[in-house]
Every structure is written in C-alpha cells, then in structure tokens.
Length: 155
Image 1 (cartoon, helix red, strand yellow):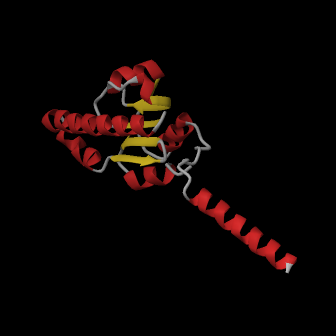
Image 2 (spheres, helix red, strand yellow):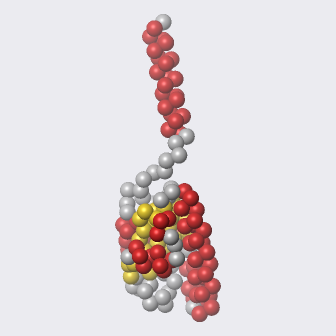
Image 3 (cartoon, one colour):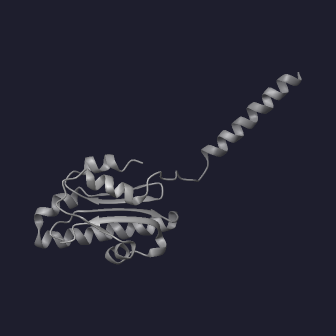
C-alpha cells in the first residue's frame, strides 16, 4: 500500500512539473549571436558588397530605440544602389519586440516606396523580404534568395 501511494505521489509530482514546464513563459535563448547569424545569411547570398554597421549606426539608420535591443547586427549595401540588407536583433522583452517589429514593418514600407520610385528593379527583393520573429529575435532580410536566407536564420 505504501509503495502504491509513493508511486501515485511521484506520478502526480511529475505531472505538475510537466504542466509547469509546458506553461512556462520563457523563450529559448539563441545559441548564436546576432552578428553570427548576419554573417551566415550574408555568406549564403551573392551580395555585391555589404558593409557591417556598428550598433550606433544601426540605431540611427533604422531609427529604432537603443533600449529596445540587447544585441543587434546589420549589414547593408553601403552605396544604397540596392535594397539589400540583413538585420538581426534580440529584443529586451516582448513589449520591445512588438515596438521593434512594428517599426521595422513601417521602415520596410518606406524602403519599398523609395526604391519603387527610383530603382524598381529592387522591388522583387523588397516584396519577398523577410520580417519574422523567433522568440525575442527579429529578422529583417532583403535579398535575392529569401528561402536560402530563411534556412540560415535557424539557430
């Protein structure tokens, strides 16, 4: 009888533990830095020439708040002849991720309008641009081969 009670108690504790883990609000911690992911995406594309931006330049170029991100990396066509860019950022929390995501979507719309007026050949890249989140990480990628880039986004 005692053995049966211990088994039932152990099974009940395992069930509670399983439920607590399943209901956890934590997101997976990325194993690669933003810079590593940007490097992998850049290496997978036939970009002409991309320049890496430092954090302050990223914040200024995109017009985002520094407080929204804990880590960020970006490479762009510095000549701006093409719309190609790779931006990866880790938001500090869900609220910051929501703000960052909304801002990047608006930036993408602005970029599409600008290139549509003076370099319409870039519109297919902008139409297939990636704006996605994985946990607290946001990806914004404008390139010629979005599917290959998407494969490099995996952590």
